[in-house]
Each structure stands twice: as C-alpha cells, then as structure tokens.
Image 1: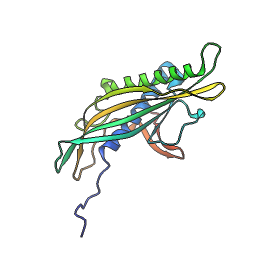
Image 2: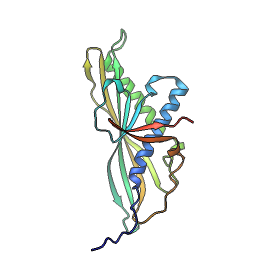
Image 3: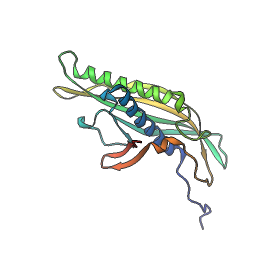
Image 4: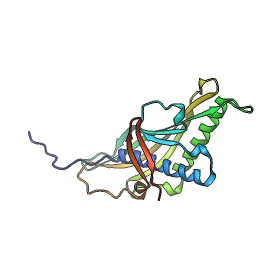
Length: 202
C-alpha cells in the first residue's frame, strides 16, 4: 500500500512551544542579570536534558514536555492541554551566616519566582508565538525538592514549576508558520550534555 500522506509532516506545535519556553527563560534571565548584576540569573538553560547537572553547571534550568491531553478532535485540528515541567537546580555554599542547604533553597525559590513572573507576564501572553497558536497558559504549581549535601561545604536542590498551555495542533499540511520574534533571540544547540538554549547577543 502506498503512503497517502504526500507532504512532510511539520514540527508539532507542542515541540515548538517547548523550545519557545526555553528561549524566553534564557533571554529574560540574561536580561535580569544585566539589570540587577545578580549572578543567580547566570543560569544555563536546557530542554529535554536527562544527564544530571554537576556543581560546576549550577544554577541551571531544564524544560521538558510532560504530557498532552487532546479535545475538540477532528480531521483537521485538535486542542491540546499541554504540561511542561521547568526544573530549576541551584547550589549553596556554607558561610559564617548561612548553611549551604538553606542558601541552596533560597536560591532555587528566587529563581523559580523569577521564572514564574517571566512566564506569567503580559508580554508573553502567547509565549512569543504568532497569535492563534496558544489560547491560554498558566503556571499551575511550584514545588521544592529536598536539598542534598554534595560534600562538606556545598548543597544543591531542585524545584519544579508546571506550566499548562492550551494550544491548537493541526492535522494537515501547513505552510511554514510565523512562529514569532522570540526565535530570533536564541538558538537551540546540541551539546554532549543535552540540548542547550543559547541567547543571541544583538
């Protein structure tokens, strides 16, 4: 039997949205670093990374696709409720005033708070994509893990935000979609450790 689909199936929107989320976080954290000078915003941003971070890479952010539930199905389109996990990992060092585990938790919560604010901002109502792809989105939860002691003076901890996005997926041949200006501000690069988001300095 010959194949009936005679066109290249385009990149699915849940993939494009994942990369847009990573790009937004990378670009805006770099912007916060420029504004405040705080090194906590000097975080590496990855998508779909499953190699654990070591202390030399922290703070780091990893965005990955969790699940999608579809509704309003027909032969041309579906509406998807998509969950993305945004994992934030930070470290802390013992000092004369603060224990390493406490500092690691404060750093993680601070970074998660900034990411929540970035993704909730009106400037990113459609996550930098062309209007019509995304219907709505919201951070639905934030949770912390337990800090671990890496050695005597350093602790690390991870926390997670869950971003829920309602978006339209198309079941047909598409002309290349206009995906918005956000993709002109970063590149998605394969590295030995995973897929990393790199901002473009303009």
